[in-house]
Every structure is written in structure tokens, then in C-alpha cells.
Length: 231
Length: 261
Image (cartoon, rainbow over all chains, first blue to last red; front, side):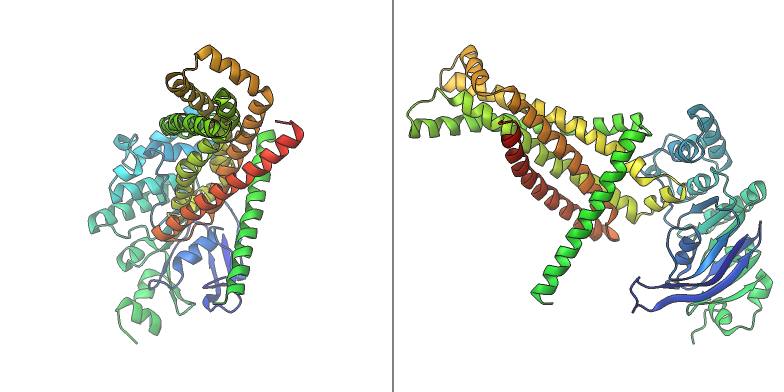
């Protein structure tokens, strides 16, 4: 489904700049959920944006067997000049070319799925953090993507809301059968959501193991990350 | 850093901005002829562009009308000891310069700045990335409606501002210099022709086209953070102001040459 070969990205685009990461090679199968973990600034979001086609790599290539992508952004990236309902109507009418009537029905259905039916007429800045995240998930899913990218979906949320978002992600994954890539620092959520977990550290990937295997790994970088040890 | 390095960096940046402006203009003009029309977005932008700024333009141009009549009267009295040409001089000056440039500069400082900061904020909060991922064309969705709305609004605002300026000039002329309304309008008609109106219309059209494009270029190139948005907005307003003043000179020269206006 997703094949990444020798991927590399520099800090800046100039030739003299240092590598943020390089020679990353991995494969993600259809309907698989893969989690990328790592300390702040290791390039997890950059990796996700390269896969999403928002950034160009400085090295390597990515093959997507299906380019129908959706993404939930770390800061939600909701269109602040549109209401919650209009945030869903826009992709439906622009991207899916639906009529206004059909789009409205579908938008309302999606708002109900994510529990925001009563907030349809509110603007993003009138919603709580958890509600904004759910709206972000709904906006990404409304175009029925085959690959869904989550950039730190539980960042800044309290444990209860964080669990609610994770449960919603599991429910929607089952419902829409999509391949999911998640970037997070939250080990608990990573083990709950991921079929496999990678660690991005020192510009390289480690792991790619099932949650239990990842937690029990002997790889020094993983041990250091999981148990919060310093070198 | 040395001055020559700074200067070459400055030239490089300005050239880059110019080429980006040119690319944006090409894309927008292509959409003008091939669609999609985006009527709903254009109407929304016209309301935002036109109606929001209308009170500011009325106040500014009304005062301009009051001031310009007094200034012209003083100069005429000092130089030729006659004030009979107040309507002619006022009409020419308002139609060719003030009635066009003042609304354009107000649009730059108000709506141009708002447009740059809006797009800049959308960039820094990943909203532009979200649009790209949804395969929504940024130029078609964000720039084109504002481009059309700006042209339409600025042409209307210019005609309205000329009317308001002349109206207030007429009020001062009649109250302070004893012109009757009929006398003033007759003198105005004698000095101001259709060519002057065409000149004003063309200037408004060009300013209306240029301002949103420059504002959008700076918005798209905005750097991260609040400081990035602030810098982009300042640069956008400065560039737009200089371009409006420069283009005003060029268009005045060209219209005098072609239209004899």
C-alpha cells in the first residue's frame, strides 16, 4: 500500500544543511495501522507531511498505491472562517463534487458520527479542544480516504478526551477500512492504536514491531524512549 | 553584512516576488476565461471588500473635498486673483488623482493588509496544507474570488469617492465662495470630460487587480509565527503603496498620451 525507499530530508533545503533523517525504508500494508513515535524535533510530522505530499523529500521515493489521502493535523487546521458544518461541506462540494443538498446530508451524518451534531453552526474557535479534534477527524474522513494520516491526534488533550478520540479512531478505522499512519508521543495510545510501532531517533527508524514486541525490545534507542532513560 | 550583499538580497527578494505575482496573475486570468466562476465566494468577498470600507472612504473623501476646494481657492486667489476656475481645477484634480488614489490607498491599508494576514495565518496554522490535501486549488479558491471582488469594489468605490469628494467640494464652493450649484456644475462640465472618467475607471481597474495579488503573494510567503504574519503584512502594505503610487504615475502618463485626458 505504501512503500518508502531511502527517504531523506534536510533541516533546510540548502545543500550544506544537515539531515533531519535519511535512508528511511519501510512498507505499510493495506488496512494496517502504523504508529511513528519519537522525541520532539526528530521529524515525525515532516515524515507524515512528505507521505501526504505536502513536502518534497531531499532523497528517496514514496510509492502510494492509492493517492486518496486524508490528514488530521496537530493543530487541527480547521477553516476558521467556516462553521463546523461548512468545514465538512467544503471538501464534499469541492473535492467530491457533490451537490449542496447531498453534501449537507452527508456532512450532518458525519457530524453525528463524531458527536458534533448540535455544534454544526458553531465556528471552530467556539469549540473545545476535543471537539475541534473530532471535527478535524470528520473533515479528514468525509472524503473517504484510503490512507489516513494523524499528526499527534491526542496532543494537548486531557486523558478522558484523549481516550475518547482514540476510541473514535478505532471505530472509524473499522467502519471505513483505511490504512492509518499515526504520529504521536503518547505511548499508551500508540500501543492501543497501532498494529506496528516505529521509533524515529537520530535520523533513523527503529522497531516496526507489534506493540508488545516494541515494549519488550532490546534496541537501546527504544529502551531509552520507552523508559525515559538518558544516554 | 556588507551593503552590496544586502542590496543583492533585496533585489533577489523583489524579483522573486515579482515572478510570483506574474505567475499568480496568469493563473487568475486563466480562471477568468475558463472558470469555475465561484459566484458565491465573489459575492461574499464583495460584501467584505466593498461594504466594510465604505464608511472610511466616505469620511476620507468628504474631508478631501472640503480641503481641496479651500486649497485651490487660496492658490487661485494668490496667483491670478480669481476664483472662477475652482470647479474646473477641483474636478480635474479629483477625477485624475485624488478620487482614485485615496480609495486605492485606503484599500491597501485596510483590505490588502487584512488579506495578507488572513492568508498568512492560514499558512501558519496549516489551513493551506489542509486545502492542498483536499485537492482544492488555492488560487481558484482563495485568490480568484478576491481578485474579481477587488476589481469590482474598487471601481465602484472610486466612482463613489469621486462623487462624494465633488459633492463636498461643491458645498464649500457654494457656502464659502458663493457659487450656485448650477454655476458650479456647468463650470465642472466645461473642464471635465468623458476622457477623465475613463482615465479614473482604468486606474481603478488596474489598482483593483494589483492590490489583492500582491497581498496574496506576501500571504503565501509568510514565515512562521505572529512575527512572520506581522512582517508579511507590513511588507505587503509597503509594496502595495509604492506600486499604487508608481502605477498612478505610469497610468497618468499613458492616459495623457493615449486619451489626451
